[in-house]
Image 1 (cartoon, rainbow, N blue to C red):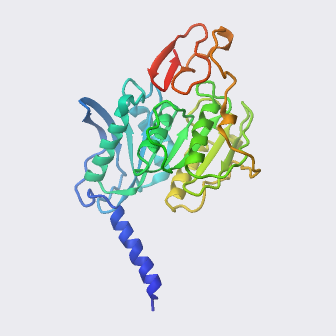
Image 2 (image 1 turned 60 degrees about the vertical axis):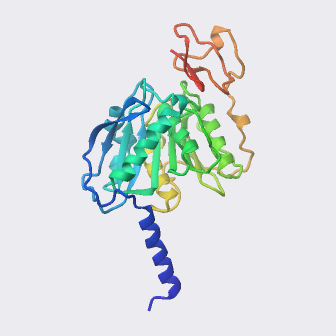
Image 3 (image 1 turned 120 degrees about the vertical axis):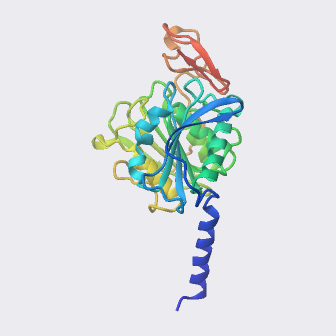
Length: 344
């Protein structure tokens, strides 16, 4: 005989499952492919990828993959949504939005509005699990993933930010969201100090205990993972020895980012079991303060000395930027948005 407590737990689980299923469940689905919508009077495009065996009665996970600067939705789709599609089976609907001017400046919050409309469309037209929305991206795409975590913590359960920085704004940012940061010690475009800045912001928001986070040296083929103890939402930091790349290589030549991201998303919703896999990385538990003081870069004040100016593609101005505000010969500092100017 089933006990009353066991029956109550089972019923509660069934109710939660029904509540998470969107109003699009049961509807005839739209097809995969390139789509468009009007956002604030502008035509915005995106690629929608349904599972090959899409079931309109099953609530699916949603992963939104934002592209990098000068990339496009096609690049994300052709790359298997940062390698996650091959891990998803028939569980997940993928979306690759296209940024304005090949980026995610998010001026006036217009890219957040675009994301809002995508989320509304997905919930209304398709069978999705409203408790399993995730975002990821590299470089500018990672920055946009950070931005949606700040602005829409009630929508996104977790984000994976690969070599991101504070480029697309952070409106809000006081509500916890599960955060995975991946960054290279040899990154000369968005230095690892900029990734640490995002990490430390989420360590504070998510109520995480201080912990030492060792990192490989620049150029070393290694990745070191630090899993923090947090009271509100998890934070994991993976530093590797590579540069500004979307598919970093760790120990034994393993491309670890897709597996770590997928495991982190699973753990955030209690599926797949436990914390992300540590088969190709290690973590440290030495307790030392984790503060933004360790995030400062070598260029800590403005300078006009060309030898100390930012390299081409590097940051040269923006809100909160304390590094060099000039560019090395062959490039000029060009405004992208209030948060970011870049040497181009």
